[in-house]
Structure formats: C-alpha cells, structure tokens
Length: 392
Image (cartoon, rainbow, N blue to C red; front, side, top):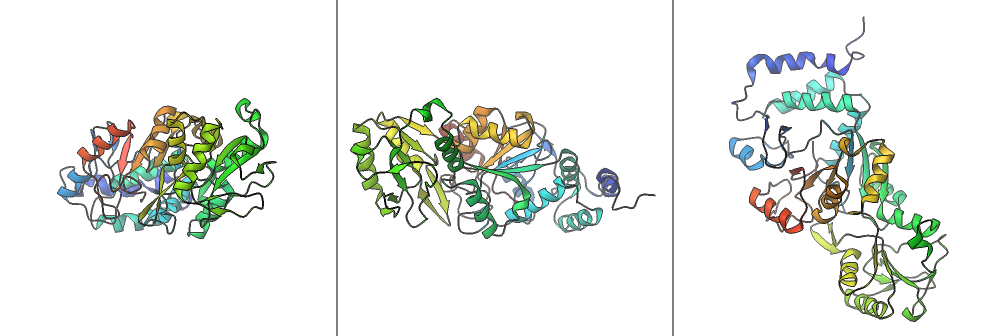
C-alpha cells in the first residue's frame, strides 16, 4: 500500500476537502472565499493578497476586485521591481510565495505541510479554497519566468535576486530587456540592427553601476558628430572611450539627445520603463528620455515590455501558449499593456509604481475600485486581475 507521502496530491488532500465540505464553513460566512463576478473577469477564484491580515466583511467588500487566477496558469511571468522587491529589499511575503509555487510545481507539497498551512489560515478564514488552488497548481505544473525591463543582463538579475534572499532555483529562467538588447547588438540578425553602425553615444548608469559593452564590438564616442546611434541603458551618466562613466544630470542628458535629434541618430533604449521603484521613491528610467526623443520625431528602438517579443520568448521557454500563462506586474503601460497586446492574462500589482496615483500609503493596502478603473482607462491597459502585492 502506498504511503500517505507518496499518494497523489489529490488523494492526500481528500481528507482536508471533506472537513471543509462538512458544513463547518458556509458561503454565508464572512470568511468564505467564493467565485463571483468581479467586473474584470467572471467565475474566477477571489483571493486577497495580504493573507496574513484577518478577513472581515468590510475587508471582503474592499478587496473583492483584488483577484489572481492562479489555478489555470501553468506559467507565471513575473516582473521583479515593484512585484518581488523594491530594489533594496524583498517585499513581505514575496520570497515565500515563490518558494510555495516552486514546491507546488515540483509536487513536493506534502499532506502534512498543507494541513499546517491550512491550520494557520483557519484561524481567520476558511482554507478550503486554498486547498483547491493547491490542487490545481500541483496538477498544472506552475513555472515562473522573470520578465524584467532591466538594463542589465539576465545573469546579473539572477545574482540580484539571490542577494535579496530569493531562491533562484524557483525560476525557470530570466529574460531582461538588457539581455535582449545585448543579443541583438551582438548577433545583428535583425535587419534594423544589421544596418546600425558601431559608434555610439552611451547613456548609462553612474552610482547604480555602469553597463558593460564588452564583446559587442562597439566604439563609445564623446561627440555626437562622431556617433552613428545612441544607446540608452541608464539615466545617470555618459559612457566614455576609457570606460569610466561621466556623471550627468537629466537636463544634460536631454541636451545630448537634442543634438542627436538634429543629426537624426536612432536611439536604442535597453530599458523602456519610465520610472521604477527604489525603496519608497520612484527613479526616472531610460524610457522617459526615449519617450521625449520619440515625441520630438526621433527614431526609437524599444527593447522589452510592452513589445510582444519578450512575452513570446517567455512562452517559448516555458513551453506554454497564451492561454496557459499570466503576467504579474506593477506597470500598466509596460507589463499590462504588453500582456494585452500578446493576448495573455495579467495581474496588476497596485502597490508598485502606481501606488501614489491610487492613493496608497501602506504595503498591502487595497485600492478602491473607482481609482483602479480610472487609472486603467487613463493608460488604456486592462488587467485580468488586480491585487495589492505578490504574496500567497
């Protein structure tokens, strides 16, 4: 006879289901998780993000739009800044969420572990629907792929996550806009990049660490008149032929771009984000400079989200199609708009770069429905689900 530990996950959870179905928790209970029409999507599991917070009737009404359809998604595409961490430290619950998802993916959830988890949850609300989520995830084989508009290469991103305490074995792979840029500049098998010259003005980082162009066969120049294109990795400095970045203000970098505009130089932007979170602040990203350059008539090659390429690359690596994955991100213009264009589901994290626009001041705070609808309409981006943060 098979042991309890070796029995299929569905069989091992049967006892827990029986307890939950016995009538101890009813749909009329203020702690019940049910399916309902959320306005964004019908018949999906309603879950709150900050599960360590006791659920009340008022809390349910406040968060009934904060939903994440975990159980139908075989792959999660995760943004990092604003979802997993703020650039300085991981968000509460994010590391645990990744670990739990990995254990589910590997079918390592034992009946003992689930009972312990449910016992903790039952103190404040019913755990039955959590069990259903676990069953669905275990059967589907969830995979996590980091999709980040980071100027840096994928290997650097993995090291960053590791330094913040994340178990990087949780992630199938990492795709960054910086990696895509590097590969296109290296291989030049795309007609647009094949026609690009080798001499460039390099807008990079200073205090955050300059981006290396080693191995790309590029020549960094100081004078716009000598350049064939502009490459934007950062917003703090200009690269130099010696390799040492020269600190520049945003105003000085804009002046360089105006000179490039006069010469009609194409601009490659390795990080399309407009801003990113850094602790409690927002920092201007290369996408802001690129957007202005484009608005004035300049030619811009946008690498990363919201372009479809980064999403289709992730789907290919995860071995899924558009119906089997979900993008989790905090940027309506990048994460959610790209998911909309690619035809995949998306979950909008309200506690990231849009927190102040939504009037949020605390981690895990739920945004109002009217504020969410207004913001989504403003950006023309419509998530499938909305939740305050990426926690179990």
